Length: 140
Image 1 (tube, rainbow, N blue to C red):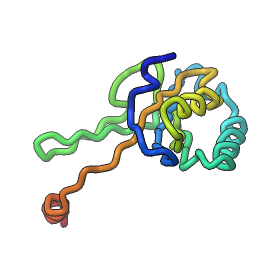
Image 2: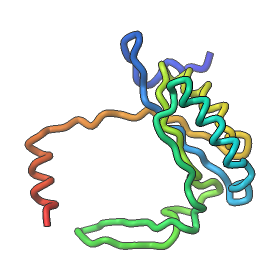
Image 3: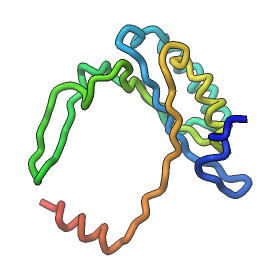
Image 4: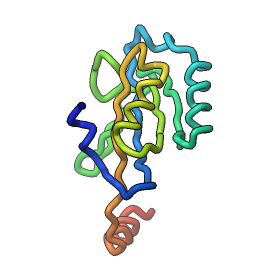
């Protein structure tokens, strides 16, 4: 058994964890998987109650990167870094645990052409006083 299957969030029985399944593809494989295959699998996940959201992305050359340093925004055409594979889309799912999330991710159609990164989401730890302070600072 893979030791990673025991890592990650654990919940009481009957609860689920949200996982973001990030789809990565190389430029050469960007259109290798038909949209209809992805839509069919998303439909299966919806029927089973696992699918929360998902969307394909346009190719990486359409990206714009925004960085803010010392209060100044810098805009750059293209992705943050050059990589062999780029983020092509995502599936937001609910699963009992990492093992079930991996089983679901292994059936995402583009996995045959690229890779799927499975990552648990987390809840924000919120201090309401700080939220109000940040909101006031960001107000026009």
